[in-house]
Length: 569
Image (cartoon, rainbow, N blue to C red; front, side):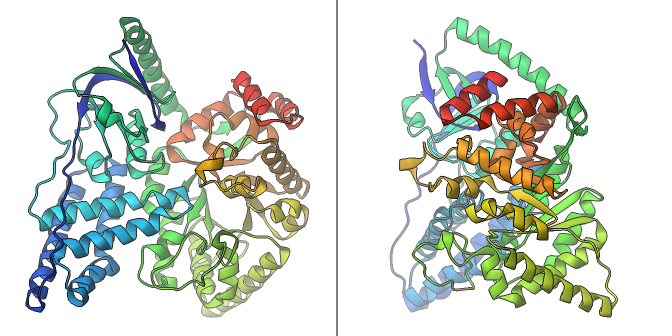
């Protein structure tokens, strides 16, 4: 009899194969206190372990061709080179007389705890990277060679309690048909690799690694979030037909990805990507992005041990701008504070930091930091189509103040003879209730809007999107959210301007037709989903979807909305 197990979809697709149970080593940390005379010895152990793992990554980078795997290798190299990481370990050894493995373990736990507490899902999942490099360095310290998935005897579906970015980057990509894990999130590096390799993956299955023995025949369905263990002949036949259809669909979308997102009746949209660094941009370009709708610049600050200088930022913005050529690069100014802290800056303790001293509020209060970023952006704008976007705006005054700063900086650049785009666009993210209500006023001082649905949904519904107790309430298809989106789009169009969307909703293919009908001009989301979003737009009639959107706007309940959406596809 078939055993049907449910999981969270990390990567879509279907595969049939034998299950391979991958059990990793459980590291036992030695907690013995060392003497002062042993401090140098244990410090050297840590230095050697970090250097050894860095060399492994160096060799991997030279031989690896998959871009997403290279992203992880480079990210891990950056983390290893972060002085905060090694210095914190050494301080624990020197000041607290902790041995090498205990000092390393505690430092990694602290970093994982900080990242796991973040609200931003993209940043939150970076905890896996810290956990991963900690495990690899500890293995070096303890002289353990960790198990990996690089040499498999046959094609299989991997089952594990948890997979790290290292596990997936080292796995035999010709043999792994898919994977399912007890733990993990859908925005983790592991999930992104699965999407990039186009293999089905399920995460958050809680106890799948305990329920199976290994070697069972199974079907992994990444479209419905199901794992069928010991499926029937009829189920196997049915899923083989689905696999063949998906293969044909992938081949078709590969031909679509670089085409214009133009509806059958002539409306043209932009389908762009959300990125956090240059490596993300390379992946987005490979998936046929029309530009970048959101460049999260906080990574430049969070992965550093100091506020990055104007020059350091300029080089990154310039490279991204040049890579895109005439395609737009929308850069969000520093969105720090709230759930995103800095090791080198002490934010004030707040009762509710998510509604506190963050984003544009922090920037306008620290204009020296803000000016460094704006100058870097202005200079980089000389090399392409760069646009600036302000986060967490609630008033016209915030936009006016920023424009005044920009004008002063432009005068300085003119005096210095430095080139920049004199007509650079300045837009805002619409993600607060205030910005929705004041959209008609805010658009007068903005060149464009970009709707951040992750926060907009949270604040509109007064629903913490990280609270599992009310997770069923947080829903982008809630009528209040949809009406808010429509209002914002309409106000920008009345002013002769455009509105994009850079929240996760923009790359939700179930929402594409609705958002198109609401009048959305730009869809910016996960790179892997761009070809499908573009394909849906190309096969839609704007006038028909516009009429459909009007019927949705008249609905009262989220279930009614979701049912209507389902019937539309």
